[in-house]
Structure formats: C-alpha cells, structure tokens
Amino acid sequence: MAVTAPADGLALATRGLRKSYGSRLALDGLDLTVPTGIVYGFLGPNGAGKTTTMRLLAGLIHPDGGTIQLLGSPFGRRDRHRLFDVGALIESPSFYPFLSGRQNLRELAATGAPVPIRRVDELLELVGLNGRDDDKVSGYSLGMKQRLGIAAALLSDPKLLLLDEPANGLDPAGIVAMRDMLRNLASTGKTVFVSSHLLGEVQQMVDMVGIIAAGRLVKEGTIDSLLAGEGLVRARVMPDQVPAAVEALSTLVERARIDTPADEPGWLVVQIAADRAADVSRTLATASIYVAGLESGNDLESLFLALTRTARTDGGEGSIGSRAAAPKTGPNWPAGGAPR
Image (cartoon, rainbow, N blue to C red; front, side, top):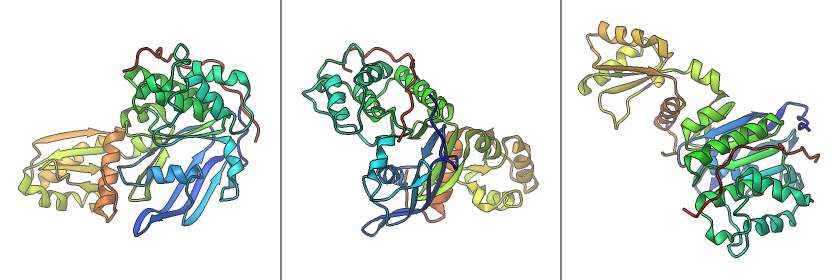
C-alpha cells in the first residue's frame, strides 16, 4: 500500500541547522525542504557538511542549533523511537565478517522493530544478493557490501531512506539497478534522500536537488527548474583579457554570476540561460574582446561547479509508525558473482 504523507506534505525539513566541531563550523544555518514521495539529491563538495547533515538526521549526533522535522513532526534527542520509520546507510556499512549476508540481516532485524521473516528474503532478492546470501560477508566485494547495506537500511520498511554515497563500489550495471530501485521506492510514496558525487547519475535519478557549500544551502529546487533557469555559458578569451571581460559581462549579469576557474586560464563561466550565448559573445565583442571558444549547456555538473565555486569565493570554508508494503518487484540487479 502507499505511504501516508505527513499533513504538511514534507518528509524532511531543517531550519537554521548548525553544528560545530570545536572551532570548525560544519553547518551554518542549513535550511532543507524535502517533499514526500520523491528522490532528493543532496550535493556538495568535500567538506561542505553533507555527512554531518546525514548523521544529524539519523540521530547519530546532535545539532548545536536549529530544528529538524522528520515525517511531519519535530525530531530531537528524545525522539529516537521515531527512527524505526527511517532507514539509513551512512558512510561505509559494517557487518559481522564471519556471518553470511542473510545471517547479518537477521541479526540486525532482531535489534529493532519487528520484521517479518520473509522480509530478509525479499530484500536479498531486491538488491541482487540471492545466490550469494549464504556466503560469509568477509568474501564480499565492496559493491556487494554496499548492496547489503542498502538491504539493511530497508529492513524496517521505512518511510524515509537516508543514503550516503549508495553507489560506492557498484559497477555500472549495479548503479543502473540501484537507480531503478530508488525510483521504484519513491513511486510507492517513500522518500529517498541521497548524497552522491556521481552528478550525471543524480541528474537521471532525482526529482529535486539541494546543493550546499560551506555548510549553507546555495540552491534548492526541482531538477527541471534548476536546469531550465540556471543555464551556463562558457567563453574563452586571452588570459590577460579576463579582468576586462568580467567587467564587460557585469553589465549583462551580476558579478557573482561570473566565475573564472583558476585551473582553466582564459575561461569565464557565466550563469545565464544557455540560449543567451550570443548575448555573451556580443557583449564581449562590444568591448573589443573576441572569444576564442564559446560553449553552452545546463547539465547538473556544470551548475554544481559554478554554484559551489561562487560560494567558496564568497567566503565559504568548504572544499572540493505504520508500515508501507515493499515493492513486489525490483530492478534487474546483476548477480552477486565472484568477489571483485
């Protein structure tokens, strides 16, 4: 059956979320808004605060300030029982190496909310480990352990799934199967909150994206609206003309929307609709600056790089309840196969 949505339509929300480790500020007033029944991509460069956020949402650590709302209700130190409705895979999954995959899932199932015996079999098939389920986990490859971690996160049939780099160690066929599985879960009304560095894969998988840098949200919205409204135009000029080119283009867009990547001398990245490439070229030509290269596009990777570079330039510190039925059929996961 479908998952019942919270009254406000949100599976997850944070407001003003803050967390420090000593003198280092990891989260600086993070606001996230995640509707029910979608796959939400949580993106940011290394050190931006993604894993800290995931650990806060899973109740593994506690915030210094701000609020968290899970499945329509406030979430705090005394609400850990509500995590039975939340499944999580954060950082590398840990298992008993001397037990089989099946035995590990059974041991985990015994530590939380009641789980039907058939649930373990359903999940082993869902993640493509049937056939290797009775092998010791010590013989599993990294990708197989990751699949087992996803199965463990789904044991209690959660309404909200938190996944930190779920494609880690998976081969291309496994990544495609994981994408299909997460889309299937969202189609039943579950909410999937996934952090990933595979931006091309995220673009194909998610409904909505939140991008953070230096512990702050820099952009959030549906994938379609972000790519439609935040196109990019890249123009190449002589390196010694870059300052003059930035000055000329500031009449077309705000300076904050012009990036000059240090690793690409002579290139300017302008946050402007991709179909306005001619305006960029015309503006530069009016200033007697002639482009040697002009590119346009609106892929997620380009948008991500432009937004997070701008955030760092601006002073950031980051660097690069009721149970729902599980889907009866899952993606075509490749067989477990030999360890690799």
